[in-house]
Image (cartoon, rainbow, N blue to C red; front, top):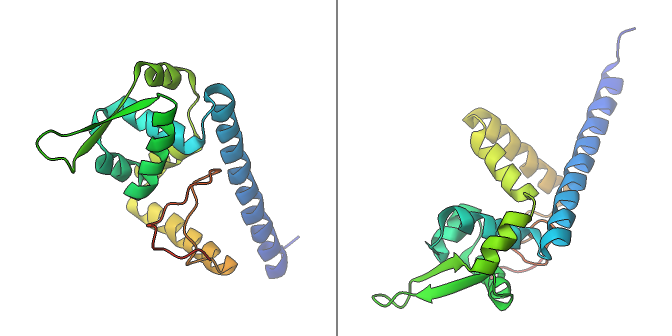
Length: 171
């Protein structure tokens, strides 16, 4: 039996929705596991994972590695510092430069928490050939357009934090 154009289109739409459901489910699962084991949000675990790989590191470099705005990272670090997971040190030569490192408690926490979805996504996206990355990017841009949220500041995955400069207006 030959599949009609409408049936093929309906199947593709169902595939898109099913794949979005899978993505949301796995992001939620990873985030909940990290929260249960470490008592932290996914972005906090992600920051600590990056720090475990490269600390001490400047806050601006941490933000770049996490693909987040520096003010977003500062908020994440504020909460981690309140829980004695990280420590920040201001440069004696240039007081504008702040580096951040894990504390002993932070290193212990990182050794216990599971990997989170943001880390897996970043690793996977970095590994894509340029054409495939462009295809993924364009497809997501289209989905954002369909939902009409192009101007919305992008929230971090399953977190109250938003990745946007403070002057950005919420939609």
